Image (cartoon, rainbow, N blue to C red; front, top):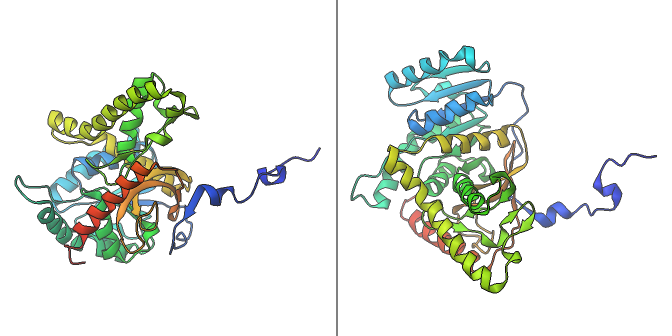
Length: 350
């Protein structure tokens, strides 16, 4: 009996992928495959070090480079990690204020950023971060021209746009961490409410990372079962109220962690490590990340904004964007986020 090696041989249409996903325009091919992998983390603060520690414990790279403007703290963090060598997979750890240490990186993760001063406008904060990124991004692009740029610094959507403009990289190779962590929080709270495992919940937060993020109620499923379609209209109305409270809890959860411990670190460390794994190992997994969103879901082609959309990630960065069916309300909120970001970007002078 002949062994069937693909669904195509069983009569499954070979254009299903094109129906499910929309390809990225102007995409560059992945850099040449090599056995040795290297990740650079820019910024040795709480977030940067949580990311570095998670990458090490999950054995995601052969070489880890750390860059920070404070040489003493940087050396201390490097030594502290190196002293754990007997308990970790073998990884070479480097650190320097000089960006030359990042040469030939596969992924450059940017966590450095200016913090908002009380009373400071969002535009002023962005201008200070623009000045900082002008010092960070060009040398990263120069030392690792084939790298993927992964921006974690906030406000992540506009800073990812800035990194794209300053790097000169094709848009598929510049990615923001976006709502990947928001979506994890969303799945956890939904799972808690439904008394199931969070890994069996498929649910996305999309749009601008922050207070205006959009919860895609229409696409929530548990074990492949669409949630909202299971309710009668009366029950759905009640559940929509519960879901909206969950959405607000997702948005507020980061503020709660900051209020209690002063900063967030561990969850974003795991979130970014999951992105690095999908990218480096060419896993084609779907993550809601900040990407160049013009042309998707009704966002005008001439509006070069970065927003989070469910995207397929692989070795060349963004491979495609999932064609999720949004309700008119969800699509409208997404476009309003794009409009707000576009208006803000016009004031940056890039």
